[in-house]
Image (tube, rainbow over all chains, first blue to last red):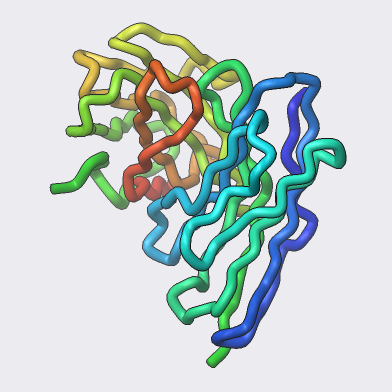
Length: 113
Length: 114
């Protein structure tokens, strides 16, 4: 079975600091995609960043970047210069041969001023 | 304009009742989904439709019946509601040909069964 594991139920960071959220996954597929989604208190899930497994270069979107370690099946999210608006649940997710996303259990990020 | 819209956003009902949640997307996507998020925030896929055709049907009780009148709409009907059905239900859509799982979500519909 394909699984996604987020071992940190909660994390906190001070405004302007950097925080890293962990994610590991398990698959025997060679071609897949990995995602980080953000769910703020408004509930709507928003795509933060996306990584294709065949690309060695780590994806970056402004203050958000990933550390993709394919051999270790690790896909962590780094948020730099954290802002109050970054406070949310963050879900790691994977997609293999279909459009079915498998989600991790989420990490709640708190940002303190 | 809301890309993926769900109605109602909140629904409170008694056990045994039948209820529906509607979803519409104006993104021109071919594939639509229903996800369930339980009280522990765990998200799990329930169904997906591509151009009105059922593609994914996870082990969901047959009390749940999705209906897609056209590719822009995917409604979820639930019969004989049970306490365990209380959750937030998310509709989402994606482009089929990308097969990359990039989903656009609605705001969710919180269902409370009393």
